[in-house]
Amino acid sequence: MTRRRVALIAFALVAVTAVTGVRAADPVNFVRAIDDLPLMPGLVEIADAGMVFDAPAGRIVEAFATGPVGRDAVLRFYAETLPQLGWQAAGAATFQREGETLDLEFADANGSVLTVRFALSPSGETKQ
Image 1 (cartoon, rainbow, N blue to C red):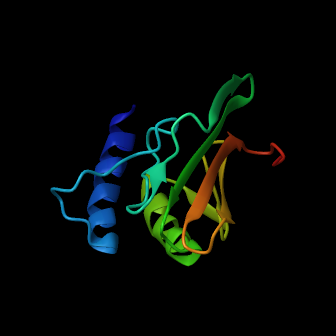
Image 2: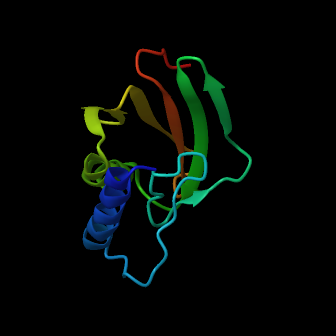
């Protein structure tokens, strides 16, 4: 990881604390397969539900997290946090950085628990 990326992650952690009210002593989790993607407080990553594939055009990653949070809160969290890590908004639930696209997709199974799909792919790849 470059110094710039480490500095951006540190800055984002401070911003996450300000935005979410998470105290500095609280651990900030990251999506395992996307090491610089913070996991919103209230979400828990679903172990072994995703996949990682290194393609010639770049990495393709799919990860899932779930929790008692609302879709709007998730979108707000990532809209405020990801730009501090170098991501540019390319839609309400799409972000781009350094030749990669991150899409957030949502499933609300029972009305109280939301599942978020994080899909990372090389920019220009079509969603499946």
